[in-house]
Structure formats: structure tokens, C-alpha cells
Image 1 (cartoon, helix red, strand yellow):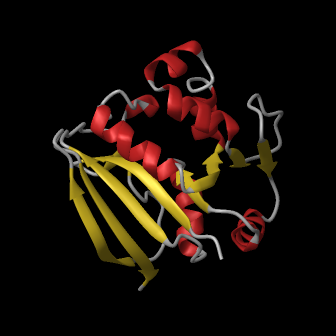
Image 2 (cartoon, one colour):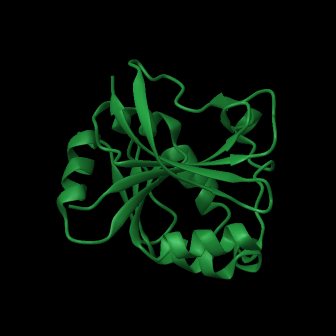
Image 3 (cartoon, helix red, strand yellow):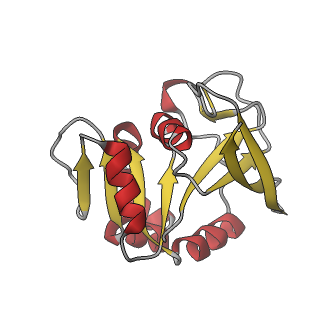
Length: 185
């Protein structure tokens, strides 16, 4: 069975995005990009909520995205993209919009042949999948910055979750990747 893992950048004060969906505080360098490229090589599907999809679709398939990180831009463009959203017409190739029975359809997606699946950003989708027991691994990249305001990680979670640390990695930039398995308490 394929695994679903969450990958999320997080500020030290617990936010995954700043006010007005600001991500400018993300600490990205060559070492991070190398990590991301290796991580992406084991994946064929990306899960998004609509807002995250629109942010990514507005950046990665553009000349700026290609210039900033060609390898990730190409991977993002060719990967299968599944968006949990009300119906809309996708602007990015290889995109499927799931509007009904999102949990059931994502559970079926895990059963399909293929490599692992990554959930990027999309806090509301993350919380829904956590509560349904569909996220196998949580990869949280803590950035050495406090932003003061924004959207807290796991905002809206209705029940406590316990996390078991699987491994950690410190980056020279000060970022720290903490990888957890999680389960409902």
C-alpha cells in the first residue's frame, strides 16, 4: 500500500503560513533543494487543498519557478495532482479535482499502484486526513524564524494526536526536519 505523508514548513512559533498566506519566510537553500529533489524522486502524486494548489500553480509552472528551481518545477508539472475542492476547472496539467467523498477517494488512492503520496500545505485537508487516519508520516521542516501571526499548524484539529519521532535531521541553514508517525489519542 502507498503511504501518504505530510510535508510542511513550520515557523518556530508553530505557523505553517503567515498572514495572507505569506510563505516568504521559508528558509530555502541548495541543501534544502537537494533534500526536496531526493524526496520527490520517491513520489508520483501530490495532494492539495484548493488554495495551496492555486498558490503552487501560480508559481511552479512559470518562468520564475523554472528559474528558481528547474528540477522541482519540472517534477511539480509532471506529477499527478489531486485537489480536494469544490468543482473548478484546473489550470495545471495532470490535475484531478475531488469534490465528493474526499476521504473515501483518498483512501482508494492509497490502494492504487504507484509510489508514495505527499500532502503539501493545505491545513484543512491535513486535519481531515489526520482525523480519518490516512496520514502515515508527518515531515515537519521547522524554520529558525518566528512570524508572530498566521495559521497555526493543525488548526481545527478536534481530537488530540500523539506523535512518535521517527528521525530528525539538522540542516546547516538552521532548519530542522522532524519526521513523526502520528495516531489519534
